[in-house]
Length: 245
Length: 245
Image (tube, rainbow over all chains, first blue to last red; front, side, top):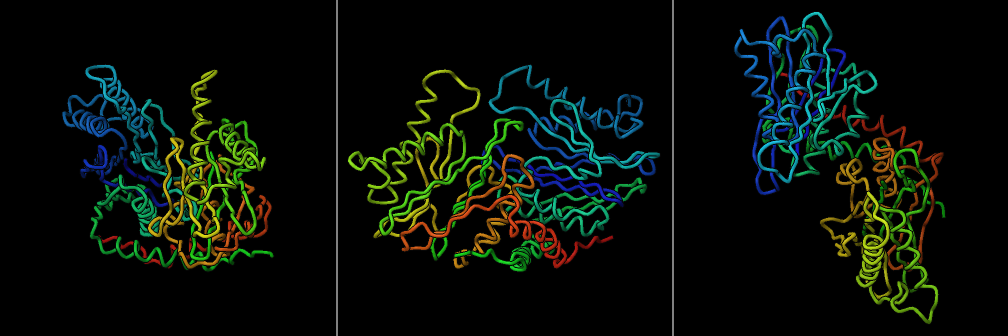
């Protein structure tokens, strides 16, 4: 499993992904699930992947190879004129990869499916965030649904629903997302640190703040341990139920 | 789907279940999922069910019919000498019901599975809580895992994990469980009010406080709307992430 969040804010977007992959509970590895293509002043496109690791790595390698030979840039993630077409390119590539593995060679008991979040901005248009399904279709975030989650989404959703505010700062958004990750990590072994984070400021057209939060990160430890107290205080601040006898 | 919680406390146990059943999103009904067998001074046994409604109704009817004719009380939920054997009886009955539907007659595309929580106390022993799987085996709550959830369990788990305290009052436990239900109801259409609640005090050997919380319940409205503020205050009480530039 995996957990990734993409969140649109008034000032840009923040994306966060874990790095745990597992085949069963006895085969756990760390792999990056966040990949960025940047051409400063022109575009920043970040994708996050959940699902079959072979599929998502093939997807990223294909997108990457197409982007590396300038004379062979059609279709390339550096050449598409809009975020919609970038999403379309990623979706088509994803569909191809899955179809290749599903139709040919040995059959596997698990599926080759993968889901992708793509966030970015191309010069001349606003930043956009899409969720791409394994079938190759996709949906876009809007003011009604300003964030997407992929992977193990349920444990961490309630706090995002309650805590999200489009006007919040990157710092507050990262805190909120870390709390959502903490709830998930505490409940599901298949999501784990380190976490990759990226905060993109609208119209900067440069990758922006990017970091990896390791398991021993002091700030993460602080909010993870502080959250129990804060949450219990919040619960305590509400009136107890009254048993009418 | 469904959501039920069974929670052991130092002073007894509290159980809560929703009442929504659905076949698709366009066929929603209200059905009770909590059933109690009581013989004052001797035993109180409550079960909650999740899964196929025909299966769970057949289970309850079978347990009920066996309990109604005193001369035919073997095996009966009123005759079993321990909670372990009560769980065994429910588990065997459940397994039989599922096997009957699975092996005979028309095939259905959905499974006939169901999961059951059983909580109760029989005179001379402590209260116990079990989770019964469709296969007919079961596990018991312990001080390490003092509560069980069945149905749509993920959304409401993090708050239970953080908020649970074995020493808490029934009133505080009901509040905590309502917050867990509220998180779930906000995220999943297939869980809905009204909610059935029961609080059992150890050694009372009587059903104890039992009520139904309707959708327009004033207290539920208060904590549901108050929770956003309380939670956001809790988030605000933690230090924001620092972006090091």
